[in-house]
Length: 85
Image 1 (tube, rainbow, N blue to C red):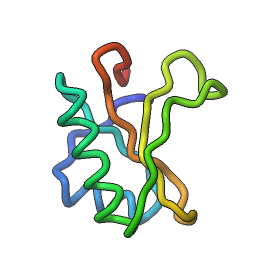
Image 2 (image 1 turned 135 degrees about the vertical axis):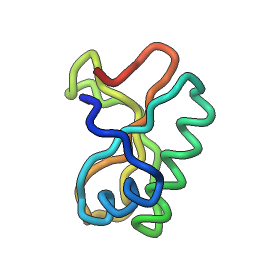
Image 3 (image 1 turned 30 degrees about the horizontal axis):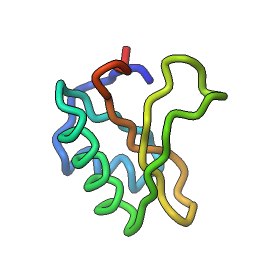
């Protein structure tokens, strides 16, 4: 996942409603995970947490996604060892 422009929570939720990926960055896994879950749930009603997918490569991040689908997209979050580039 590549970092883009910095967004506030409302902007991130709006992008998720449109099916665009977002990534929560920061030093705290717990805070990143919590905010990512909040963004996804607020934007799409329900969400499931998923580990990084092996098929996405070695830099893949854990994420939340709508459950059920659609919309497309994910709310990724950084961990101590996995960072957006």
